[in-house]
Image 1 (cartoon, helix red, strand yellow):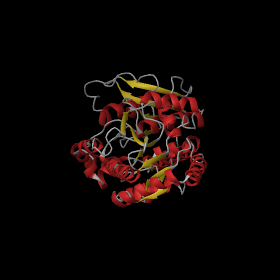
Image 2 (image 1 turned 120 degrees about the vertical axis):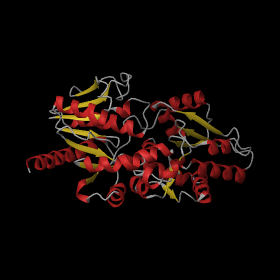
Image 3 (image 1 turned 120 degrees about the horizontal axis):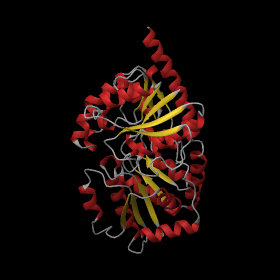
Length: 386
């Protein structure tokens, strides 16, 4: 069978959804070599850069389709994609980023990564909240079935969007294959090039309110005050600049922590692996997540992890991290200090994280996703035949 997937998340520098799309597409093609998979996007976007799908060499049964569209076809989800799906004869289309074609004659699977725009609108720009408020319910109704990355998000989708539980399936994601402990020399070179020092805490993610980096900066200030001027510890925040972050950036330049906080911007996977491997602790104080890939990636590289005690992260980290309430700055500072001051605790978290991260694989995610595809196709056929 021929299955289409949304390639739009691959048209810009990849963050969570882009990595999910690329890894899942590759794993699906490898798990189902007798089927064909197509990553489709409109010609209104330039050709994908090399590496957008994680490597230049794709499995033979996975291709990228830059679909030529007319002026009307630029309305991708309502016209361009449905027409392409019908021409190509897709048996199923997987919308990996909250959108599916509204018609086109095939089964559809919608991935809902989280409900942050609905449950935490204050952490997003108003225009994005407005769009999601009317569009996501429409897509949820249009989709044959829905995939979420955790059981906690599955419950939220059913509760807050009035979706039948039988329509929603939880399929866990996984750390990308690149994330494993790096060599000492590689880590040293990356730290030198990025000028982050030898002794640092690490946070990863788009610099935006939902990541709750203000709490981390305040906790870091507390650590600096407690430990005095001789402390060499730095805080490294790796990720692209997002939105609504002016207050955070101003606080990061405060005299207590000035020159101790480094914003690296977007970094390559190789650099990120080195940072994960050599940080004293990885800290993820997010207010809300759908899954939380960075903590698992850090675990896969051997980093001790301190994260928020929120449903998705508690589910994903599985007891292999220290969890603290995201609003409790003192508890966050205490937990980080515990890892810094207790080598036994740090080593225990590192071992537990490595073992736990290894239980998540894209091969397993692909097999479970294929099961969802088969269910969606069967439901679509029953609906068509009455």
